[in-house]
Length: 305
Ligand SMILES: Nc1ncnc2c1ncn2[C@@H]1O[C@H](COP(=O)(O)OP(=O)(O)O)[C@@H](O)[C@H]1O
Ligand SMILES: [Mg+2]
Image (cartoon, helix red, strand yellow):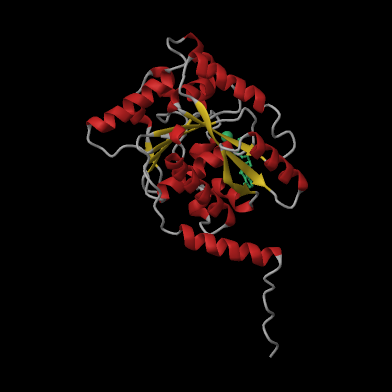
């Protein structure tokens, strides 16, 4: 019989496999620290298709799997986060629309995610596509989400329920009133940046909007976190973009980058995050590691405490 060919440790594939195995051992069953108070992160970028929803859903799943209580608010009429979390979001389902436009309490729209304990979501239905216009004529149109979330967090305290550790808000690819509401509810903005051409284009506009919100509506707001996504280390371009982002935002950019991965893009069509769809995949590991960094940085950086 022929001998089994030896694995060449020097090939990129073998190196990747060895690296993944080490990371798995390091992260398995690990619990992340609870923040001192609820952290509310708004995941924003006015470009579409840069990984906002994927990042929201998978970071949320990673944090919940590591023992934290996590709430995702789907604030995008496309409802992609609702799909990926397996939330009911047919027309007529109680959703973020009723909360924003009809003053329904947030608790009336919260659903438990089917696969992951400690993970809840507020779905978005097609109704939300009209909200951008309907909000214009409503009183306190910019602070409606904040009031709903504040009331809900307070309600949990009064009922003696465990606090929510993380609230993640997924935004539409625009800077309209839905996104403004999300910037007013959060203290932190998380910007996913796709490691591709034009990645930085438009970032100036986003940062300007955040400055305006800080000046007029939410003085505590800051860009706390940047996550590089869809990274393909084989291309010079991805490396250049990553380097440029890190040099502009050394404090904010997570060390972990999320690679381009087929498993990540397949997961939503199964109504799952990649964390449950294929927990041992490189993509799931990257998001779990990014979630750990996010959770641990809160204790290292004074501005996040
Ligand atoms: N790391 C990744 N690798 C491969 N595909 C990805 C990755 N991140 C996101 N995608 C895919 O790219 C598309 C856009 O991602 P999405 O999270 O929906 O962006 P956004 O919410 O910013 O519009 C989706 O089809 C998603 O499945
Ligand atoms: Mg999206």
